Length: 347
Length: 259
Image (cartoon, rainbow over all chains, first blue to last red; front, top):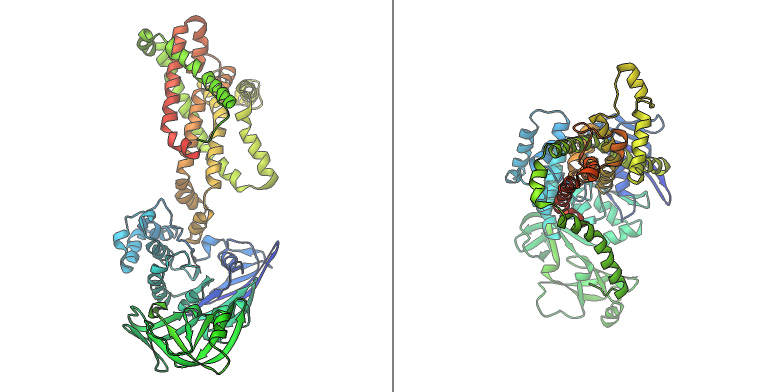
């Protein structure tokens, strides 16, 4: 199963022109800043926005403007998950999940829906109304509602962005698990690099209606080709194995982190959370290393300092701090990161 | 409350008085000792029964025809929408008597459609209960259409998109998503429509006439009784006032909520 699409949309002041290929078994994230055209692209693939071009899913042509061919949304066998769940407010959780199955004319829609809820551990919410759910539960139900129809193409529009940071990780884990067992084409759009990197095998970076870069997260962040990707690469993203209160990186270095759990994890450290010192700092930070200043880049009012060492990191400091620390390329420097500034989530 | 200049307060008081005095007159001058007898009088009961039947029938027709009309209106854009919307709302501003004349010209025995019906089936609408229902529908339906259209416009279109993406066809989207989500708008529209139909006078007496038991609804009965039996007219008016008050109280959350 695969998706091949050429989407062209021209509106006043906006032009989207995208060639997209998503293969069987991969999750592709279309990553881009707000206004890049991500949602418009999804809507076009879903048949909800008029476009020029061609959409082919699993060998079947869904849309071909050259031939005047258009398969309406309800017959595309797609699944669409919105940023904020969009559960039907007048239907119970069970009826929401059963909705798509009933649309397929299945007599056992409610039984099947109940099984989906059971598998997700949400069976005790079957009779609840959507307004009684927490944000995370609502989004999980929305995902189940879509998956229950067994679509050939799953379109996710910023599925985690509307959620509280505290529950985002939980929903991301479930989403990740569901995506792994989903047999169809998976396409995610998001402006959040963490979401994209955590969920996708391949990134497609969209800016101003054009694809500027594509590849694995590592490939994309290693050689930024635009400002957006450069900023994206600016986040310190580490991967390792978690052992309770610390994470072991592949090179053997260890990072202290709160409640890291067990197993493969990602760790994100924002450059602003990386403090630099001339001498070994006293006090509470548990992550202290000595490194070497690799490069110093001025970004407006902030300076990004890349420091090599056991844990290579980018630090963001003020120009006055650079002067006070006598930072120059090649100079030794102490790096400190509070354990609480390391955010960890399962890989 | 923010300060309001004194002359404006005086004018506002005068305006309020203008509303309240007639109502006070109605209540104070009502022959309360005869009210019970008036309500149970057969003419009153007949008029009331007919009024209820006609206004409910008009509301039912307005629901069946008005909701689809509102849906079509809400999906249109540009000039065609403006024209159709103006046509739909015309009965709201048209003097009801003119509406009655127009109905007569269309459905009367020699009317546009009426003559055909008469020739083909020997059917005559004028001066029948059906005519009273039609007159009330004509005048009251726009209230429902406007309320429902407003409801559709404030509806998040993504509910319908989500339903379509889940595989629901046009009819299922309408029946299982759009219609239930519009329930509050449909309810308030129907109540307004019913209240307007219940009070309908001008178009009814023009198109349907004044036949007790057939077309003589309460407002018509009030008008006729005022000449000969003013007490009965006052009792009937009180009944209509009570119904209006009940509607106002029942819908106060909705109306006050909009303020």
